[in-house]
Image 1: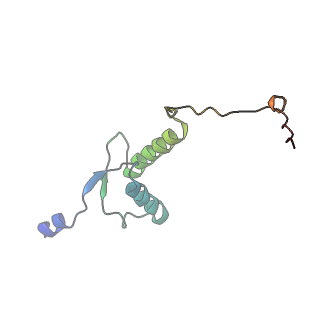
Image 2: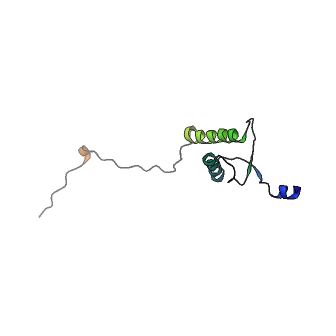
Image 3: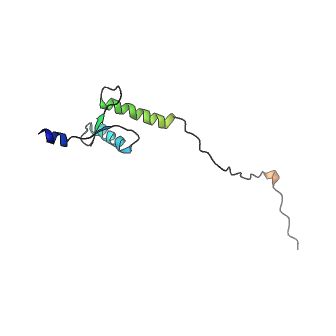
Length: 98
């Protein structure tokens, strides 16, 4: 009986909000209020009291960082200079001679 218990347990993982699969599994949990659909057991790796609190903290940090952390501007190697013409700069066309 102990052998079947050990063989049929779900592997333990630490929740990583950067992985889409982990976020999707947590979303299913929020909809069903059950871990039945989850193939993993989540380990608590901080001072949280339960798994849901731990995952909520990680998700909040993940989305807040995505929203508010300043991103580095892209470096462009070449700057394209566009010619801007003003109305006063344009010359009238020359009339065709016959």
